Image 1 (cartoon, rainbow, N blue to C red):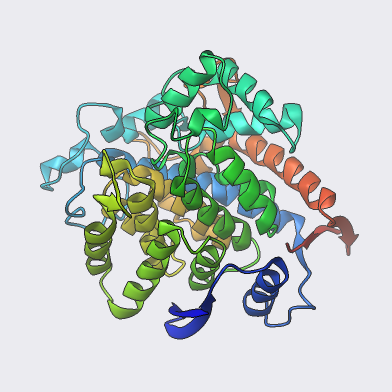
Image 2 (spheres, rainbow, N blue to C red):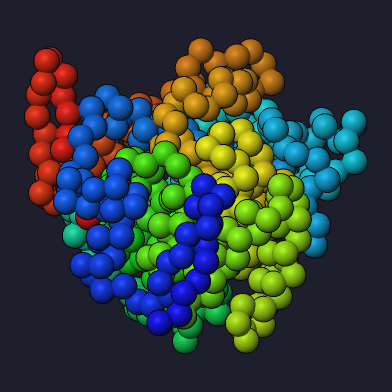
Length: 433
């Protein structure tokens, strides 16, 4: 049996390099990641208000990461951004900084967008999850591919690109997933696309990593295939586990442990863990990611590597490790790493949001995006949907959070958990799976 060394908390730990059987895999999770007693941690209790706060922070964290990364999306590839992005940058910053920026479209004008919308606005880092929320409300957590296809055809027609665009066109031609994401039919199957639109499944299944990874993988195959699905599953595991585990080193190691040995994405995560243990500067690790995973993934020559699920996903893993659980540091590194940076910044922002709750997101990022005045509540409690057809245009973020919480409660109960009252407060007991 092969043994591979990895690093957790900057200490070397040996993990057997083989495919875990189900009992051994669960033993490993329970023993190492949940306080060291495998039989005592079959459930986790969380107060309803804490769970709701984590869900709210997930949604807000994605928005922040999306808008911080917008100006620099696809602008840097060979080298990262030369400065650390630690706030919202707009076209106005070109007056004092020598940066490459998307100055010819809305992405570099977040302050004006915020003024015009009166709050947050839809983009594919959140608006396909917005459709998934409606779809699960309509069809249930066991929604099937035929049903999700109906929802895509009804609501997802504009502001989609590459893998999503191809999947949608294939639906119009009569195909349904997973055919719409397969390598045979979708030439963009390898892209980051699936990672950035499926985080909501893990929020539906907090602490239930098997269900979260399974359903996120199900969602990934709508538009992607192969190791691009592995990237989605890895983030699903981290998101789901983040509801009960705060240590980012453990979350990343756990994500790697759930992937098959043959996965290049697993190897990439293990490499980033090792490089993180060796180098204090994230830019050194970013250089190694670029050298080893940008142009090729195994023997596959990536047609447009700027959008690859592996290089982008590993940039996010790097940001999570070097960010050390701090929201601004994590999202800042995710943006500054470059590539398709608004996407991994949104994913990382949602993850750290879950870990730390809304109080962990700097107030200025929630209130001070507009150029005129300052919001009194995060993003003015407003989410304007202008990209997904025949769904409400004006939405209160608090309502979106409550709707997600209702489905999460259903998933907890359906999977052996329960809701109970204690001393006037509501709690959930989640079965850790």
